[in-house]
Length: 493
Image (cartoon, one colour):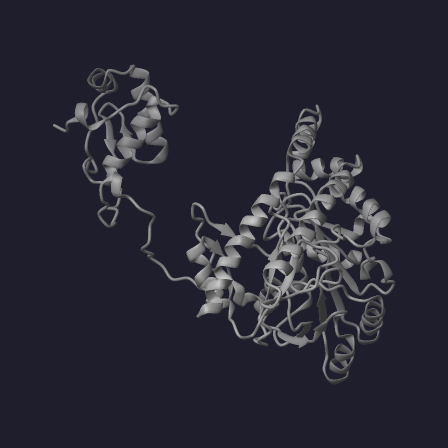
């Protein structure tokens, strides 16, 4: 006789119903072959007396097991463990206290080493350099939460809670088109707008539509790593051109176009990633003329247009595009907080339609409630007010960061104070290496991160991005202090 009384442990304080606790424990016993196929189970009255539970609990348990196929009910005979259950072949598990994530794998799959990135382990007391991230503490969470609650309380909100448009919420598309027309000089309609889960999705979709194997795309000698990876995934050729204090060297682009067919040019025009320089007006016009002449697309990734400290932002390439060559990509992720995955692709209607068709298979649609929240956030002027507020904070932090760098590392680091953005492009004296700096920094509880990814072309420029926006004054002084201790030790090697 199976020891039913001692084999089940029911927790009456648990949020899980007793019949489900009982069902799950039955299933575990069946899988472990402690209850064998064809075993007859006790009657519901008998088992309820054994376990000191209501008979209805046992009846509900047996019904659940029957629905899942673990048992079968035979008229006038009783309930039996399903006779057709195959034996589950699995490795013997350790005790519950020793259970760890599954490391073994019982099938083959394809891995892409180009996608591998090592994320630093978060350690207590460490400080982490980033390449330009907003300070989450400045996020207007109360305003956003209040707007979100108000939207969710609308009587007709159920209309937004089913499958919606592949293009994103229509109200947000209309509001965003109007906002970009007013603030960035665009001339677009909602049909030119595709809402995405951030700019990374926009780059992915653009690459998928523009590039096939052996196609050519022009990028900077230094370039945004994730964009490079996206393009390489399409098995395309990255054709690199120089980047100087005025951005991409468009004369080089012209010479390349004379020699080979170019499908696209990728540019971070406002603040080149990673060097932070701005593409000059002369080169913007030159690039647009080349796109018209040679029929290539310009993927304009305007990832931090809102943050400009010395003067009004230069209007994007998309604002001067009258020939339909520019695909304009942006997001609110950096402006507000990375957690809010709301971005956009602005392009000719036919391109947007096809991008929406492609988006269907990676993310059927966005978060309509979040998109409605940001529609209200933009339309009410809250976004502009937030930008003005954080601009003052980030400008102060930029000035302090650059001042401390000049004072502490006058000969080791070379950099220009950035006109905008959230990071400084810092070149290390070539007598030293970032590899050594990164290793020694750990001793002073400072994590430099993946310094290698700033030189995809292996040019040996010996530079990295250092973000400043995340740190308040006290944190920034401590960061520079740890970096100073690190560099003093590096110099003595």
